[in-house]
Image (tube, rainbow, N blue to C red; front, side):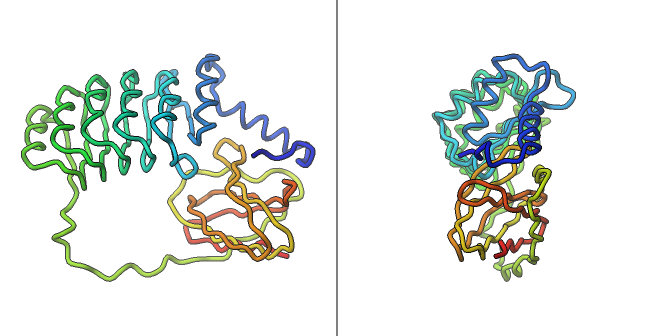
Length: 293
């Protein structure tokens, strides 16, 4: 859903338009602009890379974790992706077929996805790949066998997978400059007391009268706990890194919501007609966001 233009102050409308334009480099071809728009529509974040002409960094966080193999086909339509973060998405080995043509890819995050051995033949041609994270996936030595030709690969994470000492040794022999990280064997770790609850703090309610909420900035993971003390139903929007707005939910009077977020994120509250009321700004602590009466 989007905010109604009639209910948004003129200055805010101008800011949103400039934010959308700023998300793309001035030299982006029309085809790239269309591909970027499609990726954002399915919850992705797209940034031009610094110092690499025409290169892109694509990430999926929070709202993008529902990404499927079908959505990954939309991602692959953007040429010159050099960094791709699919961590915690619903991508499977069948979706790896769509990555086959991303020959400029240098960094690929697949940790905690649903991939297994079957799709790794499609990664064998990614000759520029330097970093690959497979932590928490179902791969075995069969997947590692497809990586031996990736001569630029320098970091590989296979913690909590099905790889063996023998499979790792074979890959290390084929790629002597590769650093393979297997983590630790959790079954051999003595149980310790759970960490104490994370510190929390009340977040300041910033009344929205003029100007615009600041953009969110990528930070460390935390939580924000909403409580609606208003007598009306309200809507909760995340202010995206590019300045756009993403609806995350609605709160009835007295309603509560616990939301994963990042520090330095802005959360805008509107009424049921999407008229801005105020916003909160998160910190590294768990934030208590009480929407006042």
